[in-house]
Image: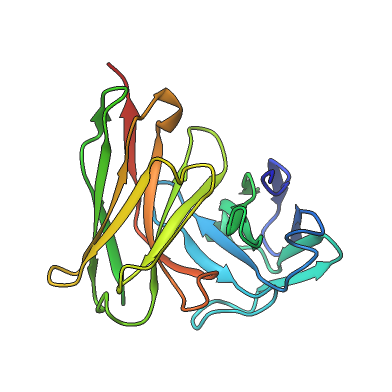
Length: 111
Length: 119
């Protein structure tokens, strides 16, 4: 299966909201409520931000939210802050071939 | 807070075996989670390699299954990845991670280690 499709980059100003899309197929994103989103700063370990489409782990700001429509999942960050500038990856369960697939990543720039 | 740290050679020759170890701290490797390996090729997205349960049960990516072996050592709280017959296409940053019991939610990651395949 091919990787999930994400925009290479998005940008926004502090305080604004942005949305990052993650497009898959009916075999992965469209078939399961098992999409996760990760934030990665350079040189740091990826951090789980959203799981099972729209659930936030403990300690993650409610400025981060997730949703899904059909074969496309989305991550929305509201009230952008400078520290939100990072790479964001989506991930979906894909059955057994392979078990998990990831998006190519989106670089968020906070202007 | 669970922490994971990858270790191993940063340079491997073509046709040889890539071997990495992940040391888990802040939690027991026996704790009912799955322990995963994921890699990122330079400038590319992430690729799931597979996971292992503390009992030794594994699940590997079909594209790598013929070359991958994972193991777990509960006495040292470590798990390992072996990838044989490597080529330049295996050059990547390799991450180890803890995955929730569903096997789907990768919740804690190491910082990653770059492995270059070159003669």
